[in-house]
Image (cartoon, rainbow, N blue to C red; front, side):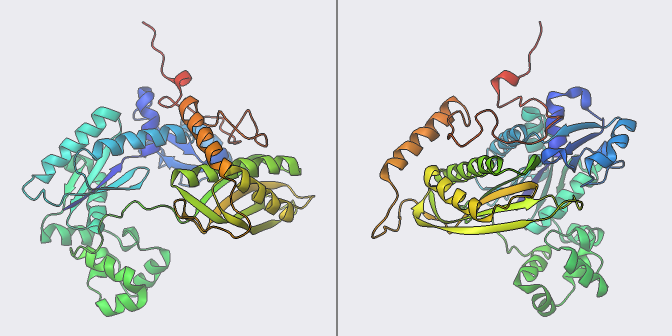
Length: 418
């Protein structure tokens, strides 16, 4: 038996944990630079569509008394970690699927009453963190998605926990679920299936295996079998990333080279830190620049370049040097740049580097990076920076409605007056 745990309206729920006065009130969370709506509470969904540009809905925010927040990823990430740590106490087999979702494998728990166990999990998480969750139990991962959707859609009847443990329940659930809402079926497949008169998940399971494999590949066939109650997907193992990226939109448009140089330096240092955390080297680094595509009144320019390193490295010093070589090659005067990014690729294990005949990484860099990482971990994130970085601000974004980072910044914790 598997379970899918999903935090309800996670970003909005995180804000409510420390602002109980916001219970049952509409909340909207904005993307980086306060650009568009990326999360909504149930109360806000009838007023604001997902992805709505914030500047176009300012009147609606005021009229409907919607509480608007900038994305507080430090808070959301920490609250997510707390939820996942609690879940791991109920089974050793857990796959963190996203910031607010996790699959759990309950193999060996056959004698458990899963409905009661689910209620126990739900109580523990909500009591310990203040985050409400929904849980769906089923024999396969795909069916847990269906069960979770039912638990969330009908909270009064299910109390946030739903179990698909019989053929009757499976068929009833699949007949209820629209084909467009099936996990893993995108817009193109939805359009193709509807043209074939397939409108529900149950209709999909009635298709011949041969047709599904031909039209939707072996991935689609696995999904069909999963919906039929035949396990085909286990929990994914935690693996090192094959590509690491740091990309950001700017709080304003940059035209001069020096501002872009500082941003690329900061993004590269971030990528290098991530490489060291997973004990990897990179052999290629990509740098890209974009102008503001929404400003049709301005000249547009977009370019990227891939620079091959002379040896495998995760040294911030070396990678910044390569990144700035790439930036010089693609930068053009006369354009207003709104976004840039750094992507490190062709990753190899740090423990088994390919030694060059003529040139290799300076061994002193490894020791230096270890000390810098240790200092930043012990005294505060990014307290030690490179001279090419802005010493005052790490991420330059518009966050005009940012809530305090209650759980990760000592100077922003809640104060009580007694």
